[in-house]
Image (cartoon, rainbow, N blue to C red; front, top):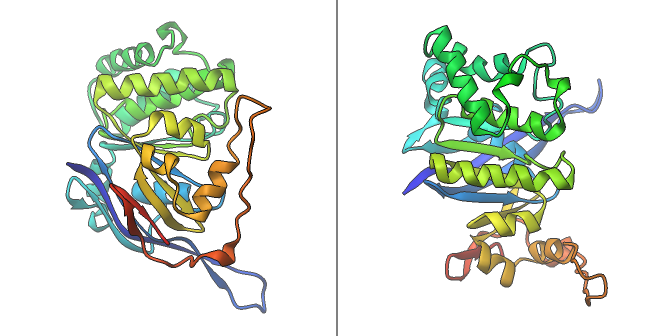
Amino acid sequence: MALLEVRNLVKHFVRRHGLWTAPSVVAAVDGVSFTIDEGEMFGLVGESGSGKSTTGRCVLRLIEPTAGEILFRGRDVLQLSRAEMREARRHMQIVFQDPYSSLNPRMRAGDIVEEPLVIHRLGSAAERRSRVAELFDLVGLDPDHLTRYPHEFSGGQRQRIGIARALALSPALIVADEPVSALDVSIQAQVVRLMLDLQKRLKLTYLFIAHDLRLVEHICSRVAVMYLGRIVEIGSTQALFSHPAHPYTRALLSAVPVLDPDAPRQRVELDPESFDRHAPLTAVGAAHWAAI
């Protein structure tokens, strides 16, 4: 059953060039559609500037979309009032990319994790403190460190604080916006394992936004590839990685590093003139579509 359904999502930004120059419109997201089933780890990949992070933020209405529908449990969140959206956000949370800038440096770690509970007026002060200690333990942090400030934690620990904050309201959907790209490689695996463990334990659903295709291949059940604001290929991870159909997907996969430096490589150069950027998605296999 689909937990989230995105239909023809559009987000335009107006770019002003100067006092005497007419503004131009940038289509950061241009007619994006996909569904995510309950309990699924759904990957959204593409280069920087492809629109994937904007898509994730539009889903949560952190950025207001220009057009489209976003159905969460069958209800269009774009039609919700401010009060209704506040309630809906209890069930839809985000883990940001940068653990250094996403935490308030003036707040103690325990207060950062408790803040969503305070905003939504959940529990007494004692119950909230107990919940925060439970969340710290859940994400692998020492509850004795609740009074520390963000600068006293490592990057990986800060991202765990961000994950604990996202889990405070027991959401169903987590938008993970490149959650490990700012971390050292040795720490990335630990945080990814934590997210997978939490998915099983808490029955979470993830929209996992990333540019690391090797990571997405190992953790996501389905993947959508974005190029210049549009989804150009979508399908099961196995089908998409074994039989990429779109030239952009093939170019992305050809750039993925391999462990064996002597292995034969054939880098695919993308020629934007070789395909129609506005082509609709068509079936190219079982549970596999591409804009060709």
